[in-house]
Length: 299
Image (cartoon, rainbow, N blue to C red; front, side):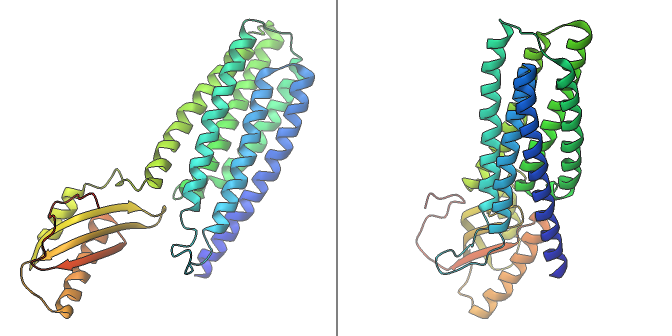
């Protein structure tokens, strides 16, 4: 328990440090973009600002998720991090669309750019975002909320690399149209990354069955147990990244006692956890009850 608490505190410290770094980068890039006239630098600043918002949302959601359940919030705030991931993914896509619009406008009217300032600010952004990426990398593996924050920072680091390359090309070859092309490429990459995260978080918010779960396989596995007749009214969903729930009705072949049901329920819980990583099971036992017996029933 203490290890989890220590890990959580470390995760929060890493988020706060990443927020502060991105605030400094955003301010520097906005000022530098206005002075240099670089749309790519300003687009990177806008992306960095979305990073700041996403990291703050992730931090708040991570803090909320630790609060205990109550009579009014029986699940607590366990789904706060999924909501944060959805918000962060949405901002990635929205920012990308705005950048595409601006890139097309600038492409038809390229402007001279102060390249030295662009190059130095891109280098600073690469170093700062790279440090933030390293801080959040481990937590991003098992947490959708942290992954959304991590992806924001990773894509921004890659965007800063693109800005750096563009700055060098503009400095030595005076290809000022490269600024618009890089902005467009950055935006398209943001849409690709953001859309995937948006789909995953949306599925979890809508209580869809996880992609790796085949409900028919779950039903077949339960049906192998003795005295079990039919599993129906099945719902399987992720409450968050750590909790996978199953809710269902279970019809028995005979009128068993409550103590027998407890033993069978224990076998079901063990089976579902070992084979499907389902760690919360809620079963309604039935015998000769007249109700629909389909696996999926619209309740």
